[in-house]
Length: 327
Ligand code: SAM
Ligand code: SF4
Image 1 (cartoon, helix red, strand yellow):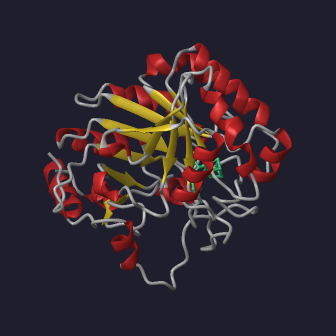
Image 2 (cartoon, helix red, strand yellow):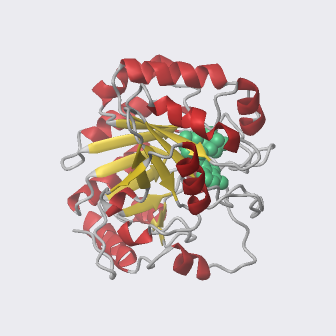
């Protein structure tokens, strides 16, 4: 088992496989994009399979593929087939913007994908273009409908942006009325490549208040602490509603996850700046045991919460884009 000094067991690895993306969501990166890393600096699929095997031996059973846009990287499904063949890996989820994957949805289950988090902040095509700076709304909806047809579990990630899409909360929730999908509202974080957070951003508590006034019968349900979300049901709705307090960080006590960035930096918290250079180890160390011990040590020191992790970073350092970190 992989454990930290606070008694948390780590069983969930989030692998960001690229920092590249075809969209430019304003909360994630500047309009001109970011300085994308050179391909040679990205972990190769072979390196990531080796890493996944090392983690699986330590008890990791769930992997999320994220980025950047995972489907911007070639041969993603072949890589996922490789991951799903690893003993001990029971779940493989992908977080995607859904703009370039519609033609592959029919292959998802067979490749081993057990769930998709689809990012969709609005149901208005014009607004979508404003937020993402690209005119791709119809493609996302096409992917969404195909995912439902294929009965692939879907969670919709909505970044809650007061003044931008807050007036659509009820409509977004209603996607869960006749569809078995979870709609989750994420607090906006300052990971947009500029270190600024719009001062209008709402906290989870404000989002919850609004949900309660829109749906007076809404009820919070108990979920495992590792879900790191507050989860609600609305009578008559097939799917659930969630709130992710990713900025106010009230859910760190149940955290069971670690991250690897596209360049192979191990992050034991979203808010740290990388605690172990796994790429260097993978490229110079032939003994997996040595890498395993280094990961164990780094994980044992996982900060108590995102505030503790953040406090170790010089305030002068700008926040990266979520695409560099792996959202
Ligand atoms: N490109 C894929 C996508 O958009 O789903 C995967 C990577 S993206 C960085 C992962 C998730 O992070 C998305 O749901 C996105 O909405 C969310 N995200 C990105 N920047 C964020 C920010 N500044 N605050 C909150 N969530 C953010
Ligand atoms: Fe791309 Fe996802 Fe970032 Fe939007 S949130 S720019 S889709 S990586």
